[in-house]
Length: 117
Picture 1 (cartoon, helix red, strand yellow):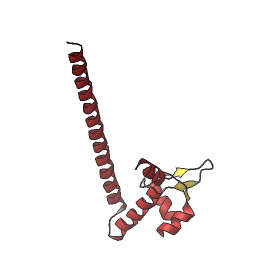
Picture 2: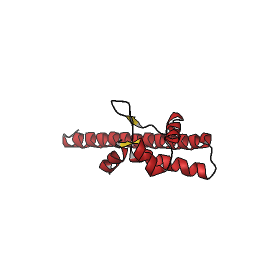
Picture 3: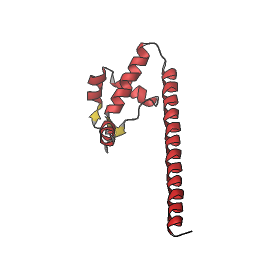
Picture 4: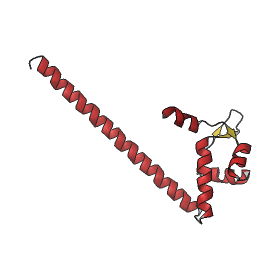
């Protein structure tokens, strides 16, 4: 799964390809970037390059706008999603830390028992 996500995040598509895939204009794509809704990578020559995840995000934005959401609402939606992901990551990291601590304690007791302590 990590390799699949890595490929989806790989920014390799120029704006012309994105324009064709999303049916958005260059101006619209750059506007969504200016609004902080997408963050395409840049080449050494400062050309924007987009990933498959960027294209998915652009299509989502387009769908939100079609049902009447404003850019401000879309920003709020993505901010909430980012916060949830951050909270989940924090919870996941906390579980990993607790699990590691628990294993260390259990391992320590096992070692103590083996030594007759």
